[in-house]
Length: 249
Length: 249
DNA sequence: GCTTACTGTGTATGGCATTCATAGTTTTAC
DNA sequence: GTAAAACTATGAATGCCATACACAGTAAGC
Image (cartoon, rainbow over all chains, first blue to last red; front, side, top):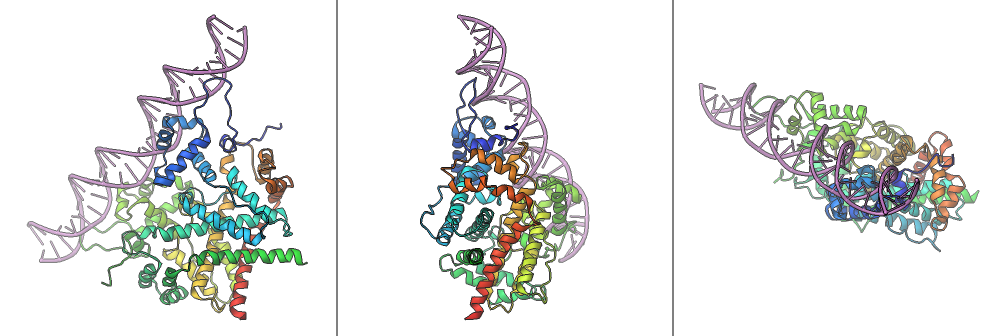
């Protein structure tokens, strides 16, 4: 009755609850070391280089041995996406807004440092121990703001989404537009230039004005990461207003 | 000199500029019909069923024939992600806030109706004709707000990101948490229940309080799509404040 | 009519995730 | 102390898939 529902094997292993077999030889591995090996490969050679074979040979077993720890490659990937998250920053003593700004930035940087995360999941509710640790800190930072638990979680969720999409944008911008490789187009302003030739001013009235006015070219001369802060402030302003509403009256 | 930079083949085809060969047999296909076929398959059987073979046989050619129109499968996928976008709603005569709310919702619904989009790209700068059409309308809706072109694009970009991540969340919530299939866990509240067993209150102080207080269980009894509106209002409040700042002084 | 520039086809290759039967290993039961 | 039971890692086999390549057919240009 009480055990009717239980977490599936992989998730249990993500939480460090590896089943310890009562008979037979001791398992030579655990999910953590497998995941760590996979992350190393992904960091070094990209996600495409992560195959059951490559991961297995890195930990010194045959490819099929991994299926003792993981039901499928997908399981391994989700475990990777969780395990890659480091310790979140400590909110102790910080104003919620300062902390959340820091939190989102750290989140984004984390993703940029392991850009392969972008290819795994768009965004799923956090389930693993590491991601939930980040969620915990965000909730903690919002203590005393008057928001209820659900609202806090919603705020964190929205911010996570922003970190993710901003990281994605920044990544594609940095690594060049994937569709434009070998076209001689190197950055946003070049793209704007070429785009201007194709854009029909009748079908795209507002956009073609903006493009011809150089809206894309401007993106080149960024002051640090103005774009990131732009969206972040948008969101935090929204949160601040919500908090004021909850507190004010 | 002027032609030094040019859009790569696929992108040109996405814009309807198919090269017309001067000799030899007429091409039997074009990118649009190939893409449409691929989208039909993805809608019906999921993205996994989209292979060069399946798409080719649906349009009545051999698998390898597709490489006359597309350099790689990835090209086909990005073409799909663009072509799937329908006509955007018309902003004429609407207040910017009303329109953008509508716009984001339509965007999210679009993704939910073709959830496979989530597996293709997290979020890349729009390059195809359909996505840019949406961008155009968002910019148009912000006319007269006092924002400059770059800011308008940034707003649209942030909102797109929100549509995407919210769709992703909603999708995983609807289709059940992928990692939890066959575990007897059916929804968020069930997950909260099971989670409570694993969560160490010392390591996750804020979160375990929230979970035990039923923060996840509450998510079940949604009024329509309260969560979606929550984040949306957060963002639009932020935009509104920005506009006020640009106008006010 | 002959060349030229194409198109679609068929075959072949190599990589990949995953299945399955098997041999080996440790613990429990008697 | 011995045998069965439970479990591990392995190696070979399967089937799918993206893609490269050489080729045969076709339509325009000369």
